[in-house]
Image 1 (cartoon, rainbow, N blue to C red):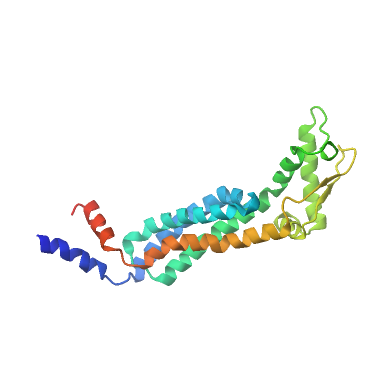
Image 2: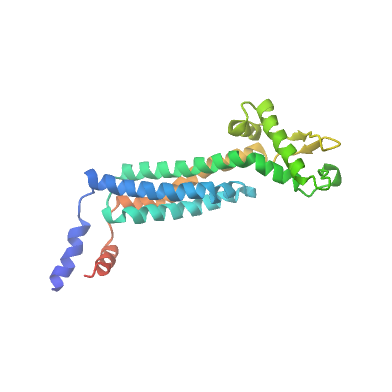
Length: 235
């Protein structure tokens, strides 16, 4: 009985890499699970991380990379070892999807973020908006319409591409709306180089931490992992 128990891990540990439909199915499982997690994070926490000051968001990109990688590893770990190129490709797709989603969400939300930042900001009296009694919603609507028109006229074609051009320029905005007796300057949230360095550095960091976990799919399981799997299977 002892010799059979000891020989089983050695036989499994030298198994050849998975190939064909078996490997494809495992990679697809990892891809689908990774995309679900990455897109969900891209629409929520990764977008929030990009807006943090002093590039603190890069830390969260690395942290969430470990989370996404763990989910992908869990979904395909029983089929190890998988082709390394396939693991890298799947990881790259998942990382790019989450990264692009986070940037797209920031671009999409910019108009509303601009309204909240301008209307609710606390600054010197001369730079505050005049909010007439009962006119809060009207002022918010005017600010929203102004920034949409401003991006379209000054940074065509406006929208997401206009926001990227606006961010790259580093220019401020001189707010001019009917409800205000004067024009009000609005400075950009961050310097252009800060925004672009933060966004571009997030991609390789996100990939590095995610692949640091998923790269285990291309290796044979260790003896301790095999023993734990055997115990969970009832051996």
